[in-house]
Image 1 (cartoon, rainbow over the protein chains, first blue to last red):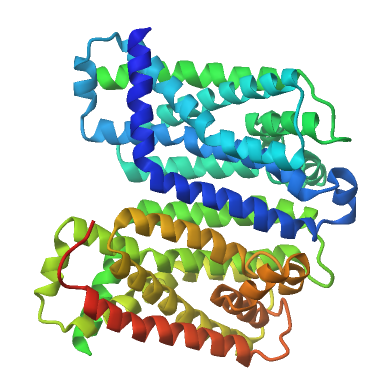
Image 2 (image 1 turned 180 degrees about the vertical axis):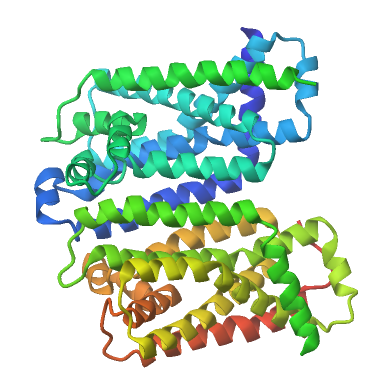
Length: 261
Length: 254
């Protein structure tokens, strides 16, 4: 347990070394919210306006999830770099078990995502409305699971790619597929209607429906936006499955790769 | 002239070494069209405008901008690895070096964006040949101007961390406070301050001219955005040369 805490501390210290990158990321996120979302609000089609009322309020929860994703994914870049520079040999020499090492990395990636996402989530609450205590705890719980799952996904990609370029390319593919095939930017019903018309592949429609980013964004919306589709517990199941799968995958892959000669 | 061409050639070659970065940008471009553009065009309604075509044209300009900005990161890479001193020792004058770099930065981004623009033209459909050639010329100048801007910022700041953050913030603001994603009238109606910034933004000039060239919008006077781009290009290419000339020596890179 102590080993896990040491790894979390190590990764948090590393996280704050990227302070300039974080400022850049947060300014981009805020520009999306306070410029793009406000302008888009004046361009909504009538049918969409009837459904979501206000794009700024609709997008704010999605933005918190976007920020969570980007920051939780950062751990992969560090692990990929450690692998290329063979820093993992030093890691293996530390007085902790392989399990502590691997679980610590996945957990710290998730916690860093949570830390980065908090100001965005509170900005969302400030402008859109505050949830009840129970809803707030539920939001934190689901977002934490999501962050750990994303961290696991990122680590799994990082240890299975041999160069930074390959990691960046794989990250790009995952980023854009998960972001754009989700309800982060637009209501899920739009993707479903395009799918029903045969203009969007059915597999991507299913991905959007099961996408944990959609589930997390829609859960926050269902708590904050009056008239939004009510919260369904099955969405938690999707997030838990995603988190469990990628955490286990990352832990096993990380242990296997760092022990490889 | 020959020496400038050598500098241009070097920068173009250097860019195509980043093949994975190029692939990633291409993936971003295609996924923006096939996923975000397609779905967002269902969500957005602008009178007399097909938002899908509108967005695809704006996307080409955003990609051109981000590819042209990349030269500034190359400069830091060179400073970090000591290549800067090597460049300074070459039998090329400082002015030839910066002019070559500015042209090289613009040219390589244009070469890179060329196939993506061809793809966007396939999606957009018909073009007015004469207007399109004028808009293409404007995009050339825009790409050179952005490269000059990136070089000017890089040699003025001399700190890769600060440059990284500044470019991130500027990218966020310049692209969003422009007509790359939405028409100027709507930006102005949303917030007059946003509208004022957008109406003077070179990304707006480039986006509007490209859309004019591809028959997506009509412009009352296309000369105005063209003059705006020429002014932007001239300022950051020629003022950039002077700043680069003064800042290039003396170290101090962080």
